[in-house]
Image (tube, rainbow, N blue to C red; front, side, top):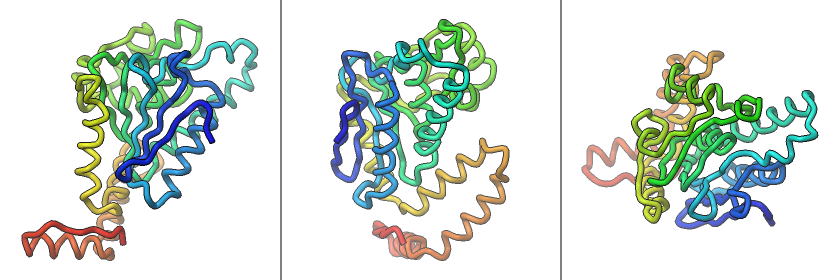
Length: 258
C-alpha cells in the first residue's frame, strides 16, 4: 500500500516507520501524503490503541525535508506546502489516541517538527535535534516556530532556530524536548513499556487529557473551562464508574472505552 512509509500493528500499537533510509528518511510530498493516510488509520481503526512514529535504520528519524523539491517552488506553492504540513501534523497532535515519537537518530527540520507534533518524545542516545532551515534561507514551516517555543521556551527556541545549531539527546532531555533517552536498541522497547501503562487506563480519559493539554497552547480556547467540561463529562462514562468501583474494591479496573 505504501512506498515511503511502513506500518505494522502489534499489541494494539500502530508503528509508522518513515522508510527512506537511503535519503536519511527525508520528508518529501509522497511521504507527507502517505503519512496523512497512516494517521487516518489511527483515527478509524478500533484495534489501534496508540501509535509510534519512528524512522527506518539506525541513523535518522527524519533528517529534514527533501531539499531537491524546493528548487522550483514559488512563494504561493511554498505557503501551500506549509499548509499541508500543518494539517497533517495537527492531525497527529489532536489524535485522541496517544502518538509517541521514537527518535532514532537525526531529527532535523521537518523531522524535528514531526517529532514535536507527537504527544511526547523518547530518544536514542545518538539522536540529534535541530531546526536548521536558516541555512537554506528558510524558516521552519511545519509548525516548528510555534511548537519548539512552547516546548523549550522562547530564548532557547530562538537561539536554535536562528543559529541552525543541533543539540544532542541529553541536551534535549534537559531542555524538556524529550521525556526519556535510552540506548538505540532499547528505544522501541521503551515506547512499548510506556504505552502498555497507558493502555491500562481509561481510553476516554486519555483522549480528554490530550484534548485539554493541547488547549493550554491554543489561544482560541479557554483551557480551564474546557477542563471543567471534560472533567464533568467523565462522570457520564461507564469507564469512570468502573474505575471508581475498582479503586474502592482494591482491584484492577477493566476499561471498555464507554
